[in-house]
Structure formats: structure tokens, C-alpha cells
Length: 84
Image 1 (cartoon, helix red, strand yellow):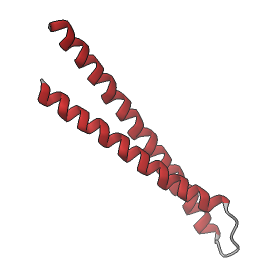
Image 2 (image 1 turned 90 degrees about the horizontal axis):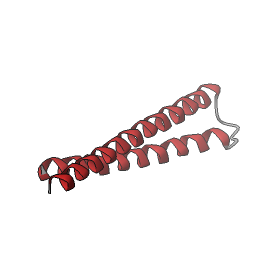
Image 3 (image 1 turned 60 degrees about the vertical axis):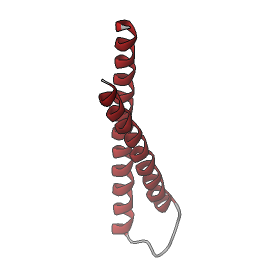
Image 4 (image 1 turned 135 degrees about the vertical axis):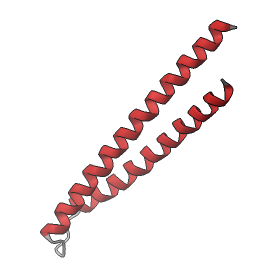
């Protein structure tokens, strides 16, 4: 049981880290979209918008996974407390 909780905790921490990194990269691309530069082409602009949206969407998915792992850990902790 302790091994399972340890693995779940490590996954939870990883999901949070991945979500944070992806959010930072998505914000970086978004800043590239909103900062005016004359050298930007229409293709580059569209690519940055698509990249920003994709990274932020992936970040949200990782934060959802993080929350689900957190809830599972709390549930496992409650079951362990009831058994003792």
C-alpha cells in the first residue's frame, strides 16, 4: 500500500511540474503573439497562436491529472485511517 501511494505521489508531483512548464511555454508563445513586430509573417503569427493554445490546453490536462491523483491520495489516506 505504501509503495502504491509513493508511486501515485510521484506521478502527482510530475503532473504538476509538466503542467507548470507547459503553461510557461504557452505564455511565452502568447507573448510572441501580442508583442507587435513588423517582421512577423501571417504564418508565424498563426503558428504561435496554435502553439500557445496547444501548450495551454496540454497544461490544463496535466493539472486535471494532478488533481485526480491528489484526490486518489486523499481517498487512500482516508481508507487507511479507517482501517487503523
